[in-house]
Amino acid sequence: MTGYRVSDVMTKQVVYLPAETTLDEAARVMKEADIGDVVVTDGASLAGMLTDRDIVVRAVAENSSPAATTIGSIITREVVMIEQHCTAGEAAALMRDRGIRRVLVCDSDRKLVGIVSLGDLAMQLDPTSALSEISEQSPTV
Image (cartoon, rainbow, N blue to C red; front, side, top):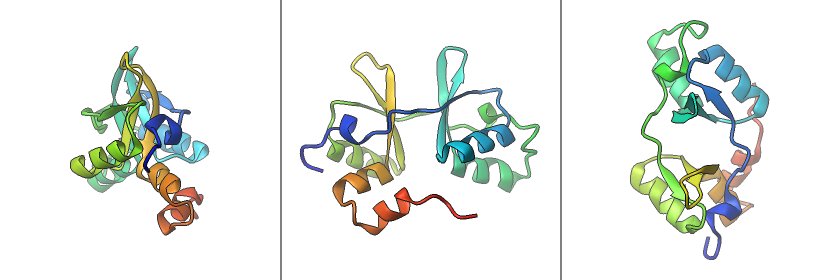
């Protein structure tokens, strides 16, 4: 990962959903976009992040109704950010230290410009690795 910046490996197409979105709609959006996370907004403000794991652990496992539960009620509100000029190695260290798989990417003005995942870093480090291959595959149903 030496020499690579976060901006080189991040995903620039971030999907945003309002906090009032229901779980079933969020899951549908994530499936159609083939992604495992969305950024959640409250008006013009960043409210947090929702991952596929959040849906399973915080909603499905708690028997919450997907049609009646809003994503704002289960999101991770404390999002971790890294500036796009930081190195990929710094992003990997941040993920390791915080025990997370995704980090939001911002510019020097703290404006959101992308997201970097463990899979993004793995594909950059070694495109032939098992993690890279898994990250590239579409989920099978």
